[in-house]
Amino acid sequence: MEVKVPSSRRPWRNALEITGARENNLKNVNVKFPLNVMTVVTGVSGSGKSTLVKRILAPALMKQLGGGAGEATGRFDRLMGVNGQVTHVEFVDQNPIGKSSRSNPVTYVKAYDAIRTLFSEQPLAKARGLKPSHFSFNIEGGRCEVCQGEGQVKIEMQFMADIYLTCESCNGHKFKQDILDVKFQEKGIDDVLDMTVADAVEFFKGQPKVAERLRPLDDVGLGYIRLGQSANTLSGGEAQRVKLASFLTKGATLQQDKILFIFDEPSTGLHFHDINKLLKALNALIEQGNSVLIIEHNVDIIKCADWIIDLGPEGGLNGGIYCSKARPRIW
Ligand SMILES: Nc1ncnc2c1ncn2[C@@H]1O[C@H](COP(=O)(O)OP(=O)(O)O)[C@@H](O)[C@H]1O
Ligand SMILES: [Mg+2]
Ligand SMILES: [Zn+2]
Image 1: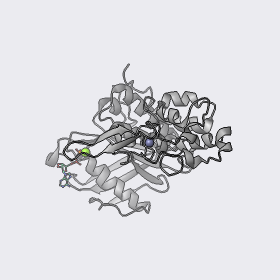
Image 2 (image 1 turned 180 degrees about the vertical axis):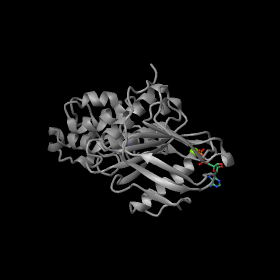
Image 3 (image 1 turned 60 degrees about the vertical axis):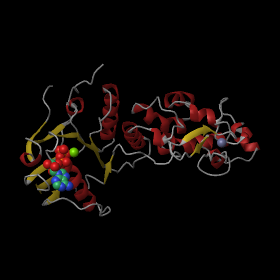
Image 4 (image 1 turned 90 degrees about the vertical axis):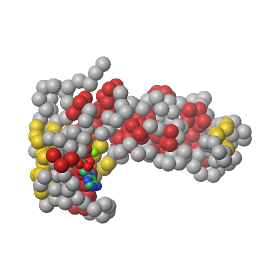
């Protein structure tokens, strides 16, 4: 399998326009960024892509939308075309989704709330007076307090990397026995946390509130991840796709939201199979009425663009020129 060239390109009407961009090596360029389509900013390393998108367009747009001051905006003259066509800007980077071992993909896409609630509704949970919070590993109540719901304990070493050992109190099951006794279709909360996303989507197919929130993780190619996998063990590319999945979840964004999603080299570290999934997710964002702007070298992503903004011709001083703007031709 390979990444296929799309059979058609989306046309566009509305665009944001930056005029007089001249930060770093940019040579006083005027650039239009089409909306409601997938635009890719290409060019050799050092040609000015990040400067244009991350130092000028994004901060200028955030300021105009009344967002936080953030970092200083690079030099430019005007930003035009916002007029309600964009309501938010979202960077989807490869930074970790949570530094602590407590957050994980399922809490990030808010699927865990529905899972906790489901467990608290089981007859045994009701008989024991258990609430959804008892099925949380983040707060006291139902979790094992020896390992604080992590299932393992850290042994700090003075001269070596820390060692993790299975918690002897819960045997790695993360919860107290009264909680583990509660089953949904013969599985305890610990079994659920051990399932892969793909298996969990199947297991919860009769529970739309849970399944709907898990499915986007599968859609972005993370079906193999375990629900309880710590966020700090995800690779950069995986973290990025978890973030993307959180925007694909039903109700995650409002009908009237028009978000400009910005990605800086999202293909980094991805196999073409995963690039296909990433592209599918990006297209889904556009179908929801958003816009996607990607800085990218990867040919498989570039060839799928609706519009290309090419900077160059070289890196550094000899770059910073707006070379071409085009709908990609047949590849
Ligand atoms: N903070 C900075 N100070 C000075 N020069 C910079 C700074 N950031 C980037 N540059 C220079 O600006 C040019 C464009 O950089 P950049 O926008 O990062 O390119 P790209 O993202 O296309 O690789 C390069 O020559 C780079 O060295
Ligand atoms: Mg860059
Ligand atoms: Zn424990």
